[in-house]
Amino acid sequence: MENIIQILVLLPIIGFILSLIIPKKQERQLAWNTILFISLHFITLCIFTFLWFQDGGKVINMKELTIFKSIGYEFYVDFYFDKIALTYLFLGAFISLLIAQYSRFYMHRETGYKRFFNTFMFFYLGYSIVVCAGNLETLFIGWEILGISSFLLIAFYRDRYLPVKNAVKVFSIYRIGDVGILLAMWLSHHLWHENISFMKLNNYEIVHEHLSQHSWVGVTISLMLLLSAMAKSAIFPFSSWLPRAMEGPTPSSAVFYGSLSVHIGAFLLLRTYHFWEHQTTMQLVVIVFGLITSVISTLTARVQSNIKSQIAYSSLAQIGLIFIEIALGLEELALVHIAGNAFLRTYQLLISPSTVTYKIREQFFNFIPRKKTLEDSWPKKIEYSLYIMSLKEWNLDNLQYKYLWNPVKNIGKKFNFLGSPVLMILAIVIFISGVILHFFEDKLPPNVIHNIPFIFALIGLLFVLKSFTERRNVFLSWWLVVFNHFWIALAISFNEHYTYTHNIWYLSGVVVGGISGYFILKKLQSKERKVALDQFYGYSYVHQKLGMAFLIACLILAGFPISPTFIGEDLVFSHIHEDQIFLAIAVSLSLIIDGLALIRIYSRVFLGPFIKTYDGIVKRNL
Image (cartoon, rainbow, N blue to C red; front, top):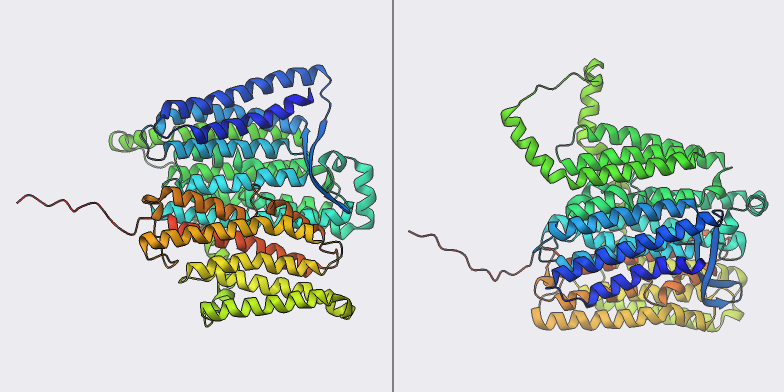
């Protein structure tokens, strides 16, 4: 029976690969490929469920594949199945099948028809991996796939400015969630001294034994997991990205932000519940943030003029209640609530175009004055204040820019006085000095060895901040991202047990992705001459293949799970000591801003309105 779990993961992989092969003109084959493999996935799940209940509904844990193993470290793929996974898989398969059938006609003759179904199958693959994951490392593989597929579907209309801008904004919030997962995995290595599986995590005796000796570590892991769940499910203060994500096509809005992807944060809390169920502080924090989200989202939804935004905030209000139910230990109620909310929002989003048409006609022929509501009984100052705040969406976007992104940009702008030749020479000289220090590590005092990793990681962080804010030289921005990985590798090399083999795992993908991306940019420059970061150039309009190749190079360089760098990043964190908190924060921030800088380069060079126009101006007949 365990072999069927492998099939549940393999079917989306095969469907995605075949979707890539089918020519873009074959709309019928593209749509039926998606429908066929999701249907097979759904039927296989039904058969497995029947056999699973016949066997007593026991929890299944499968250690599928060990990819890398060294002293005190093992990276392995692990699958886990229980009633939570069953609920989410049924929900995903059934809703995805409906959306695929709906999209077959809705997306007909769209320019990006093939691109939509490719990304749709890519999302479904990531969703299946997350739901079936048996440890944090396997879950993070699917987590990253969900992030990039979200970005691609929000920016589906890539020749428009607003969808691309909103896609970058949503991806930046997702990267904040990635920080939480990375730091949770790092602390888990030190708490368990292994890549802990969810099966062991559900063992109360093992969890209690470790947490009683390292209570602050347990609380920090729980808070990092909560941070990831909040970012993924748009819980306050990250609520503002959800309506921005509705810039994509209606089917993607329904499957991503109405039903499946937006509930992955709740899934993370459900999957790790037995780890933090006895941490009162964690439960109170989840309840407070869930309650704030529900109240703010309810008020905001009531004043929205856009139907998609109204549905988004209404869904978010329910997700806040779901978080409260999880914190109170009402697992079955939360699962039923998730399923009900997902089906309702999917239905509302799919009929939203028809509803808008109906309402436009109704307001002309059947006008009904607004009925009195509860708010009308409140003092007018409170009513009007809440109305204005809700209309402004509680200024959550402005708060994020003021306290999060603007400080990051200001630090990067401090290096604008350095030209590209000076900065590159400075980076190389300091790096060579660090390599020399590494060779003479035995002769350095212990306190120096303890502080050097943080200094080098901080230098890498400053350089990648400069890359994130660079607006002129695209090649400088690209190479600073590449060098950041080398700085991280150098910093961790001063810790014991980090060998050259680990560096090969980590830097092999960096080298391949860095060199490939550089030559792609050079080739683009030879064709278009001007390639910069001061605006959106939209070169994918005429260079689609170069755009796809550059996106793959960006993903490789960012440590996406298609290269050894993904495992290398996990290796890096496994060698950061428990007392090197600032080093862990510096490395995680470097990797997160690294990914943002890469997506920014890709978006500004290849996405947005095309800088040139080949369409002639129609002359008016006189």
